[in-house]
Image 1 (cartoon, rainbow, N blue to C red):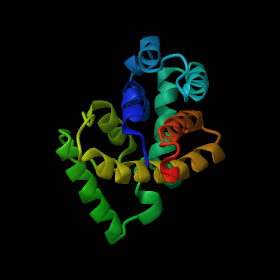
Image 2: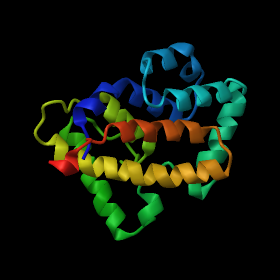
Image 3: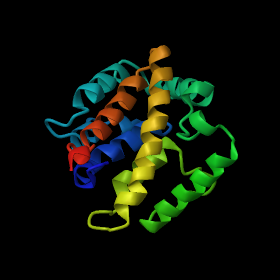
Length: 188
């Protein structure tokens, strides 16, 4: 079970993850992006700081090339979170349809031509959606976070194997999910 209130508290960091996982632009690496998204004591701050430090060693052109080589040309580093489990199976289509309905239920219009399991879009949804106090949220977010946890696990393994700086970013995202798990949910 996910503590949706705790997840809500980390909304600014999901905006940061979304920006960092999209094709890199110069403004994505302005120091304010990092400062505005992570407060002292954020669970993923050590990972994100390491990622940020590694990326500062590259030019924007090098970062763009790294992004393309990593996410566009390596099948095991796909940013589509259901791909690892289902590839192009029928079950994937059904899950994508459910995710699209979830986004629309909470006010996010799907960008034209994008799949709902695209990791930056999923992070953008967590950043932009208003779910606090919505009785539909617990059941619907359980599915979304299961997809995120499963997909980012596989992505993280591939990024580590390739010694990519993006591994630190994805590890930070996973750390955020980890602290949002409800403690004692099984004890009740």
